[in-house]
Length: 384
Ligand SMILES: [Zn+2]
Ligand SMILES: [Zn+2]
Image (cartoon, rainbow, N blue to C red; front, side, top):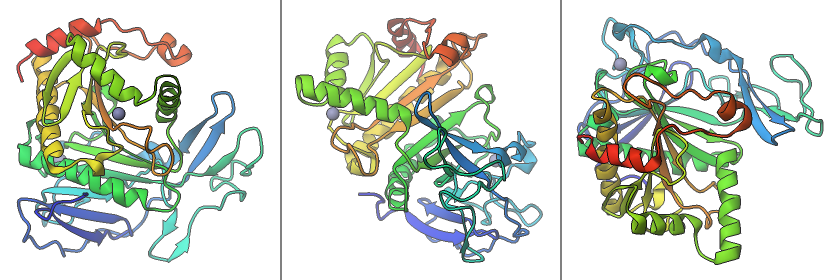
């Protein structure tokens, strides 16, 4: 299941050829035909993937992103609906949930739809920025940054927040994540669909409007790949699913569990890296968001809303956080993966932030200043 019949989906093209999709839950009869009246000039994307030979990981180099919109004043927010005097990314005068291709993507499908011809080089051709030759067999292989980056606006209300939206709207957001997983996974060359949200200036958010993003990667992300290696090893040694074993262990220990509802469990993991980190799992062994049934989607809405409100309640102000979906890759290891959501914050006290310093960034060793059991206690005490 991807989208319930109560949500109406309308896809349009923006002036520069990018796709925009309205997902209407409250206004299924709204007119979505208004055209984008802005100048159709397109941002030239020059994203390239380079393979770091030491860590054996892809790095995306996207220098065009340096010029992206940075903390505009509230009356110039590009994610608000358009008004007669101010044209934004969304042509309609109002919307429920809207998804569109990022104007400053880290990855792009590199096709100029207006001209109907490919932009960007094929593997093995000169890199688009002229910095060198793509060398598929060299020490640092390069390929065009093929992929797709989407923006998901959760509400037209500039001052809203995912954790404070009505349950019916969060349910639409969950349905949209599932729908995008199906659609992006069917696009050529996509290997993993990664929905996420960055919230708060403290972690570098450049637009305040409540929104998330979805990256469709042309490879399996390194953290996902490493988890799947662990899951394969677990299965070989013990049989069954590693993630299911973690869920069982947390539920019987109880010390770090924050809540269970509608087929979901939320807990602070025993070896949490971040001062406040919560993982949410469906208790049924499911590969990805589209596999969730209606009851499980409603359960997620309840558990996620509770966790996000507790985050804000911890220090009595909006908590900066990152929200990251881990789901099965499009093609490989689908039976090994177990869908889950990781929500974590860099705030470790009312006045202090956790920075990824030399141990974390240089050596990959996280030092967590808050014991996971204490974090769970504080989150349970925080008002939801
Ligand atoms: Zn806004
Ligand atoms: Zn499982």
